[in-house]
Image 1 (cartoon, one colour):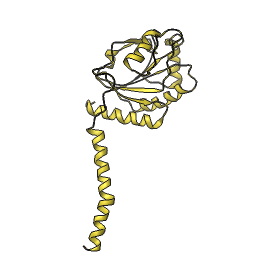
Image 2 (image 1 turned 30 degrees about the vertical axis):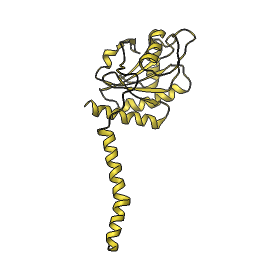
Image 3 (image 1 turned 90 degrees about the vertical axis):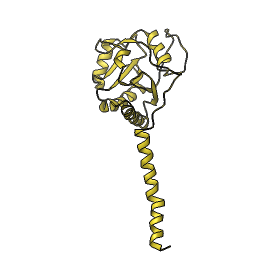
Image 4 (image 1 turned 180 degrees about the vertical axis):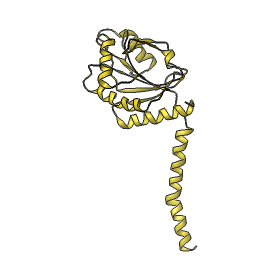
Length: 204
């Protein structure tokens, strides 16, 4: 075999082929491979009704046909919640009319509508991002039974407290499709990538 031919084959084997395989893999993951559906079989988000920072009632019907990113926070949180909010602002900047962000307070006794409205103004939260409050028992049941954001048990009573940095990705059918650490930039990059995959899957 001629030396020049050998060099060409070497370049194809070492450079061209791996790049081609990588490109095909990336295309497949983005356009064809679907995200898993998480939780128990046939699990979908059940009915809920909470109040946002404008005093508007938000329920599960408003999530239908939308991609939703959900998390739990409280306005007086000194460390984790501001970091999560900063990352969620990146999601907000990326979001279009088909994407909603829903942040549920774990401290509804203090986080009333006025407190949430002030927090929204302070954090630069837009119209597609709802800060939600309601009865503590209902909020905590929703966190555990619907979003499954924590594995701890509790009754939503005075001594019960949930604190999680997890973000939950929910598809337009109300199914959980991913969990991400909201304080980690790389994980939120993955969330934004997976939102793209859901937009492709549901043709949004």
